[in-house]
Image (cartoon, rainbow, N blue to C red; front, top):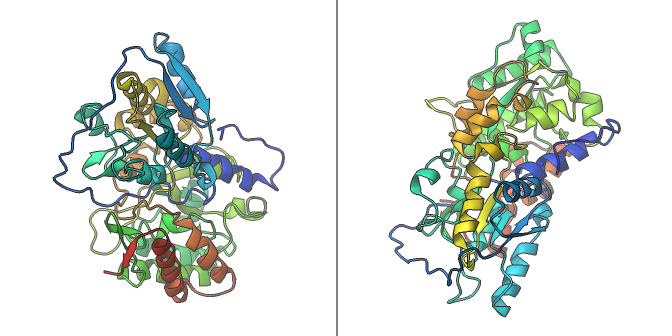
Length: 463
């Protein structure tokens, strides 16, 4: 999710452009259509008392900042408002398209003993290696920010669970820039016209989808055809597809009832043609079907970057509702499809300036109120919601659903060394377009995830 300004050169390629723009903004991971942008890292180890030992500090030393093109204006704004801070700003890909550029360069700097940037923007996947030594005895690239660098009350101000991707071995190695909590989007104008109310449970969602299929054929209540669709649906169902039980052990159990319940529900709606296997971002969808999307279960950036920019839905029609619940649940769990991070290098000779910059970028209203996507820091998110540019398009106030969903993202969908989109895209999507059901495809999806996990050094269990 590059710039929030989208070229409007016709609808034919709109969905592809918007996907690239939206994913760069929210996660800097365009390769998988925002997949694996906000997976959690698994439980932090308890009892870790190792102290961080900074390198010799030099007050006033220049800091080198690596940022992607989207975050570049924010870093430049900080430099302008803090003229006494000496900065060298370098633009790089920010981890987009699954790039390993940062990791490769850090490994080189580790060998040569110099060259590390002081501050970098990246994806949660970058934290999986940056929080661990590249070789025995080496210092992890990322500094533990909770070790006398960032006050606890600042870290406590982030949305519930949003710093989980930053946490390893009992420490917090990054600060979250933004999140993309999943909510229920719906066309309020059409819902009001047809006498429908937004569902609050998955059972109501399924029932309404069946009714729409019968009474308004051609209209849709969702899509499972994009490379990030599983993050909206299966993550929200607490499906243990990517559940790290230990740092080196991944639980993958797609026969768990919390996986099969979602697969069964979606199969029924796919069969009824209320949920499409064609992706929102696929070629021609915006032109042919964008105006017939009644509901969409997806991330907070869908409103601006899908309905507004890709589908060109007129203003004051689209609204958001909170995440849906399952039977027996008093509170919902939801997924997340995006979100980048800022890290401070453990090798920085000016940790004060580096930490001040990262804190300003992630928590200041001055920066975050006009950010492209929803800030992870709760007080800054309120300022973002109060910005008319982020709210005027919608039919109703989205603040309530956004804020509720931000604290309901399930932390059991873990951040791993590999993309969660690969197996979905290579195994599940071809099966769906070939007419197979989700339920029947779950074993093949599980094998693909397990094989990829083992190839990346994980032990795999289904328990």
